[in-house]
Amino acid sequence: MKFRPLKTINVIQLAVVLAILFNVGILLYFSAQTSMWDDEVNSYFLSTLPVSEMIDLMSGNFDEDAPGFNILEHGWQKIAHSNQFALRLMPFSLWLATLLGVGFLAYRLGGNPGLYWALIITALWPYHWIYPIALRWYSLAAALGVWNLYFFVKLLDSVSGDVDYSRYRRLLFGALVAVTGAALWYTVYSAPVLAAGELAALIFVSGWSPRKYWAWGLSWLGAVILYLPWLSTFLGQLGESTGTRFAWSNILSSLYVLWAGDFSIPTTFWISLPLLGAFVIVGVLALRYWSVSKIPLVVSVVILLGLLLFGVVEMKRLLIVTVFLSSAVGLAVAAAMREGPGPITRNLLITAGVLALIGFGGSFANMVSGTGWITYRWLDKINEAASYINSEHQDALILTNSNALAFYANDSIGIELAKYQGAIQLGSESKTKVWNTLLRTDPTYQPKMLEAISSSTEIVYAHHAFFTSAGSTGEMESVVRWLESMSFDSFVERQFTPIENGIEQFLDFPDHPGYRMTLIYLKKK
Image (cartoon, rainbow, N blue to C red; front, side):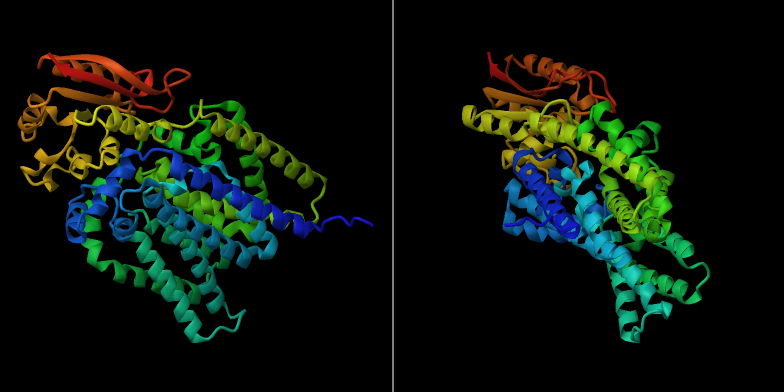
């Protein structure tokens, strides 16, 4: 019996399936295993409120995001309740919709090879191994962004005259651009930068083509019309929601994690430098095969520059950028392979592949070991700390600087008492079991907090090592001294997840405890 070699196309198809399964498996694992972090819990709290109250809070700029994701989450939470894994299935599903959109976009611009390589690179990009399951708007924004760009490309097709599209199809694609554009704007305030990116792509793709400019302009005018109910709120909050984070440290850390992923934080150069090398090489290839990669490449660059200009670049906001970048790179690789690359291009592809595998392997090794990677958020054993408190100190009052601990204690009032004081009816805070220590200097809530402490004989203080002074060693010691002055004896009972390799880079405050979570038990003398 003779064995026939597998066809190249079958190997690539198998690689696509394996890459997506890897990505899906990693995301589902992290959905179940990693603790909810404060921004996720903030989003959870907002979504527990009646929609009218939620919108009132967000329109008052209590939260810098628009309410689109939280309205969607509000409905999902009626099914998922407070189950961490079930809650994260919603952003996970939105990420699957993003991958589907990448496939449609890449197929339209590069055929089957473009689809295969775009999906492989998107699925294996380390940046896409964890953020897509955050209970925040990141996956929703990525999905809406990539589908908006796909409908934009189809709209250009419909008015180009190269393909015989009916007027109905032109109206349909224009309406879809308007609807997804407005939905994105209701999700994140930086959505207009996508419109600017598409305009820039239109200039590079078509030059002066009045029909295409009219199609783009009317479609986004439709988005503005759909956004009118929130437009005045957006304009009023614009000064507060942009330009407040412009700092070189934020920009550099955001750009670093874009290519290196979270599994090289703190800076692990044997992972990040190979990935940077691969990133630079495929960037050169994307420019070399500009004819196929230009639309997603131009849009991603314009969005990134726009976010830099307005000072809102943070790691969480780059997911919509990276899916466009990975699509552009995949299209360029597919074009190079289809062309039959010469010696130089072939060597560049091999070098990029080897470097990417080194970075991929290192990221995976760090992920498996669970040490030496990522920032404070994902490794914090907040769920384990809450479980320990519930089993060992069921009757103790809980003090903490972490909203996330209240989530696992099923204390909906305690979750956001510190951040949304105005939303809590005075008197209802007496029902909470979890008090945020930031309130100990608040003139409104301090008396109620002191009343809760004085009526308790046992207290567990759970200190979370944040990236600001609220999570510092000094703050922890200050809270303990404050409680000891009220006749409580204290001792460190348990600590979770050591902070290894010294002070983590890209953090704003250097005075951190040695552990991410520290439980201090206090008993009245």
